[in-house]
Image (cartoon, rainbow, N blue to C red):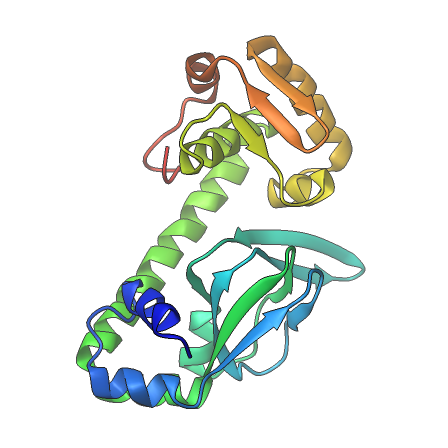
Length: 231
């Protein structure tokens, strides 16, 4: 494992205060893998063997049932997934696949649980991480239930534009049907929502979405700190 990757890992809140001895215990049996685009990393229903750390690339979390499939989240570096299944030694509730070529660090689940039991700083950080993710799920439910498709799209654009430095342009790393699934709608409804947002300066060309009136979009979206992160 490269020193730069170790420092990246240490930069995550989950590992920031872990003792050096426990970090070594955790990373010695780890493996760093590079996966091509569209590689299935984990399958829902399988037992959690590893805590995954996304170092480079882009990963989609998704779920399937009765012939249907939905996107749960889109992950970008640097982040872990799926922590709850690892700590509880339970099956994954989601599947994961790469949307771009990705580098992923695999931390053995039994080592993670061992450190969790022995390192109080890591245990506290794990509880805090799971609490944040619980709140994120609550915000997602509120977004899905309290907003129309155009409003969800508008707030997603604001959040993504903010992550990109408010450049006024969002370029998708994935197909629009994946964005539709992430927003809990159909591709047809997403197209209608994009057309509706044209009235407030949102223009689409392929996978690039330009925002010509950021303030107008914000006025329409009405972002809330009780629903939205990073806006």
